[in-house]
Image 1: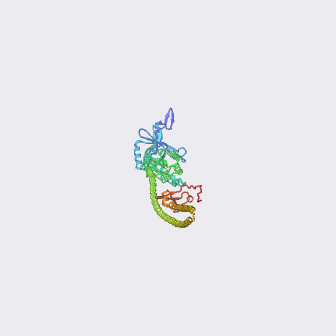
Image 2: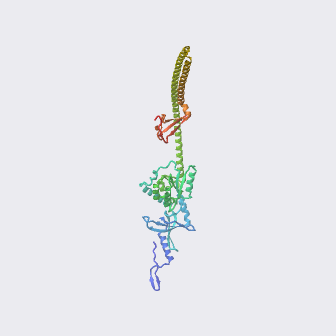
Image 3: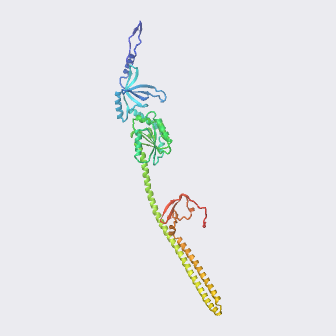
Length: 485
């Protein structure tokens, strides 16, 4: 500690021991006190209160604050900081070693090393930054993420979206990302290369900075107005831990838990993890990987369809073979039935023919007897002088005989024609050629009336040259009654 004991000063006969400084001398004395109090570098922790300013010489000016405990009131303390251009190169290099890009953004938590300084000409107190600890900054973000996960997990917020069902072919895709960003180009390029008919509905959003949360939530709400979306992808490219930390916000996680479709989170690179990764249905390593997830899902669905088609083809082949066997069996039964009917009709025809021949023979015999008798009577009539009358009687009897025989022959001929028409008309092969068909149910039973058919019943319709399988879409029962009703 430096002790200051200024000499006494006498002015116009008045002596006063109170120190007397000019402005510059006072600022220099204060600067000396600060240098004595902080002779070497110190670490300073705080939150970046607003976007830094970089002047033409490359010097970066910013403020660090110590927030109030409730995070809502005025900060407890504020200090001006400056990172000179000469030290910036070393800071950029340190962030690069940690796999991050150096960028100071509003809201960042920083741990900076430097010295306390007072600008003597301006009397301003500030902190000259020599280096920034990137590991500490990223560790703060990791701790914040862990606390958010611990808070939201018991509430079920992080599990809700994962319980939804991803469609087999998610072709209607909602996309939330920055417009004209590398992430949007990579994602859309991945979908277009697949040749699948994806339809993408874009909802552009700010993906970095103070407006990130509100912008992302507005994008989700915009997609809610579009019907029949299958899946939504929330994505952005890589960046520093601080860049991606804007997504570690419980409002975004709660929004994801409330939407009706699965969400794929593809934020940053493979090693990056943000809160939406925990809340989403699935996590993608990169925007391109998010596209691959959807493409592979559709490809798997098509492979399943092809497998089912093979199984269906095999099943149909077996069904056709079985139907062919049943058809051959039915044709044999039909042929045997037709043969039996034909033989029965032939037997009846033979019986009728025998009866006709016998009847004709009897009539001829009777006519012959009557003719002989008439001949004898004619001889007697001639002898008795009744020739004229007998001739008339003979003529009359001849005509009656001819008419009787002709009538009976016509009757028997009509019966023969009728029997022949019945036999010919009942021939299945002839009926098929005339356009008749037979209808059977799935068990092969012949269906004789529409009353035996119900909607969605499977039926088999047989034609002359094959058969078809069909399903009853509508059944109409005729209101007209037939002679058999």
